[in-house]
Amino acid sequence: MIGLEVRARIRRLHHAEGWPVGTIAVQLGLHHDTVEAALEDVPVASADSSTAKPTVLGPYTAFIDGTLKAHPRLRATRLFHMVKARGYPGGYEQVKRYVRRVRPGPQAEAFLRRTTLPGEEAQVDWGSFGKVQVGRATRTLSCFVLVLGHSRAMYARFFLGQTMECFLQGHVQAFEALGGVPRSLLYDNLKSVVLERAGDVIHFHPRILEAAGHYHFVPKPCAPYRGNEKGKVERTIRYLRDSFFAARTFHGLDDVNRQLQRWVEEVAHQRRVPGDASGRTVAQALEAERPLLLPLPAHPLPTDVLRPVSSGKTPYVRFDGNDYSIPDGLVRRPLTLVASATTVRLLDGAEEVASHVRSWDKGAVVEDSSHLVALARRKAHAHELRGRDLLRARCPRAEQLLQALANRGDNLGNHTVKLLALADRYGSAETDAAIAETRARGALGPASVAHIYE
Image (cartoon, rainbow, N blue to C red):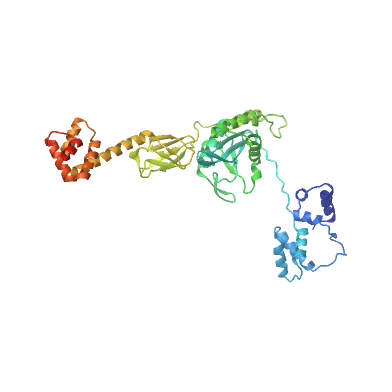
């Protein structure tokens, strides 16, 4: 229950100053129901008044107060049923009004300002920027953001999704752009960082541990539900959203990233460092911080997708919703797929057997014509051989005719089709006899055989 002084202050702020209920509740640290109760035109007697009129709820207020202290968010309807079960003879409205007056308000939490030494820490997070259409595919447009805690220098890059590979690519590109590696990276509890967590016991994603070992930084997830610990990167994402992305037009991923890089250099890094009394710009603070970052390793961390694949009956392997061709001799054999943001490669052991430009569409068929031409040639030849075998089976004397035609350099496939058509029309035995007579006359070809029938 609030005192008369607080009630008077609430009524003055609302009726005289025009403050809404929510603002008063936040500023005074009260629940909005308490503020609304104070604004009701019902006189509230002081707690020590000896003239207060007893009510049927009076014997139960101590129970309600104790229950609300243990469970501040318990609804008045539940409290009504609880006191009703304890003999309360009154109605619900009286309980509701009392709960509205005495419910404890939320306590405002104070936070310490986090100061960061040069080169000590960066904060990392994803920002979501809606959807983009790529061909027939609808892709999620996400921005990887890394902010140095001391200088507030940032690296940002858009990706079509938030996969582990994109996450690692963002790290590698950020370290190269900033010229070094901070000693620790602060994250939210992303699945790309934390697989499981039980209190302070953290099961890290093996790929983030691989990156930490390669670049020598310490991954530090925030405490659960403590997003304020990485407020610098969250404010940076909001700044990027309002200052860069709002009302911006672009043509594809490469175009928006070019515009973003120019904005970082010309706008974001030219602003003053927040809280820096010297008035330095972010770019100047970065130059001073860069020598204190950890040096880059000799080689960047490989971030390509690496996975085993195999095709079905057709010479294609599927990756990210698209089909990529392979040599037909490798159908159903185990291969290794290596995919970057621009290229999809297929390896048979250590040998590269196919390389394609990566498609970000869905349902696309990406082909190497050399894979299909060889297959089509073999299929046509196989079909031709099957036709000759059938002709030999039906007309044994056709073998000598076909050999003579081959010696003359004719296309055997065309002749085979015509001879099989004659066999279908006149019968196999008659066609075989006509072939023998044709050979006896020294003539060649289906036309001669047909002439015999005529």
